Length: 378
Image 1 (cartoon, rainbow, N blue to C red):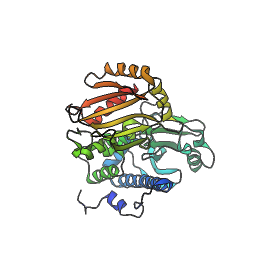
Image 2: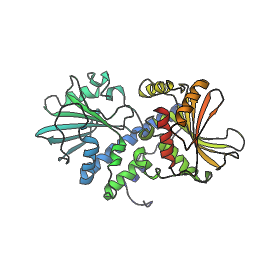
Image 3: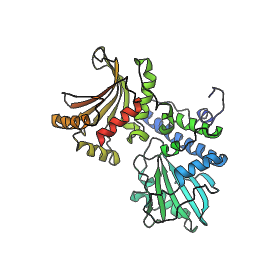
Image 4: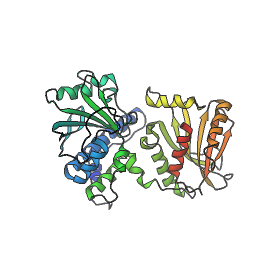
């Protein structure tokens, strides 16, 4: 895209909403949160614009986001494969980022879609939480009140949540059906040769960044040189820590360059334990039963370079373990699955299991990191 070429994201970037100056400390955190919310608002507005003006995108969005999941246990008629005519309403009230209305099987059907970009649901937005149907404040209660006399089929869709699985369920007493979708569900259905407006939207979402769209250019990367390829290495790690790849919020990861000892340099991402209750804590507790620690830091993933590394640079994952027994247990399990990788134990406090791969391996970096993480957690 040329520097002077108009686009959805360039218009947003020139607006007053995008001009947020980051600062250190609490003030900086507030500004970062403001920027994140503005990013979400832009994503909603851009999607709504394309739904109104691009028939190709309407069909993709319908299939990826709106259709009731076929795996749902609810015995309800299937939605049509072709998108019906849609009325698109942008943020009609505080409890609805985007509202779509259509006639499906002769019945007025309403979809309220809650967007999340690198964030998690508040309890009042969460259809699995009791606060969702709390009068006056819960999004479900406000939605139901708005549509109380309509007799419509009410749907609530969460797009971009880490916590919620795809599923599909009815909220007892509220008469609202809900399901969850990931951004990657939308990205995976994107055509190879999209219209110019869809290509613009893809690029704009990637620049926010919505990780499912940003990682398209990252997937084939294999860092093969020294840190002249640092930008590519950083992009791989940024994609790895995204919710679309690892299901941990990116806020729990910290990417940094370190020099642990003279002549050795590391570029990597450390995964920290969440202090909040909920999905991430449950995942860490599950990992702890496999011999992993539930300390403040769980693992480190990244690139190492130094004089004793034969290939000059290697990709590694260091897993923090609860003592020697936990480390030996994890090492034994991984050695049976990862015969092409080097697996060792570093005797420190805490104990570490290190999984390493030379840079001449054919597997792209992001795929390798992801497969190791899955083998650790399985």
